[in-house]
Image (tube, rainbow, N blue to C red; front, side):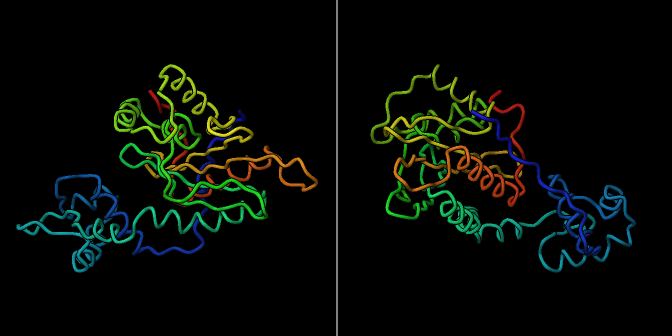
Length: 273
């Protein structure tokens, strides 16, 4: 397998600045790192700003309900409003809203199907599937539950976890239809190969003639949240489509775009340790 590490998030200099907004975001990010309320002076000192700079911004954040004051009035802490706001829009919905047009463009470019899989309570579930254009293609139905240790999607979702997380995943997993018994030593070796390569490419363990390509999508904490996969079918007629290497690059780029869009981190060096 060729190495396809997730590309770093570009850090371009912003063309436009909003100083007041920046101060507000700095305060929210600071308060998110501590369980204890902080005084105005402590916040100003931690951010390297004056108390006057912080005063109006704190008052505005309290007014809009994002920051709460202690009963004494001297301490400030995050309220639950940010959490409640985030819960109104499911992370899955956000992922699919961004991913669907990228996936569709990719399938039209390489003439191959693709899907996104996620883990839910030990099950590997296909949450989105895009069929290849033309008359031929292999697509897994949205909502399908597939194997953990006999699919590219399952292997990738398992590979980029800590040992404790992997043990919990294996404990919770109920074998999918047709999934063989786990051969632990082989599985561990496969997961290490995936970590080394940064993605999965191998012959399908389910169907003859299919090569599975699967790529991780990470969140800002460096945790894997989904896998983008392509069951590659090679054409042998006169129809000229993308080679498997070209297809691999296209879907690798899409997975990297999704990781970067959600400000995900590159593959952690200590994963699996």
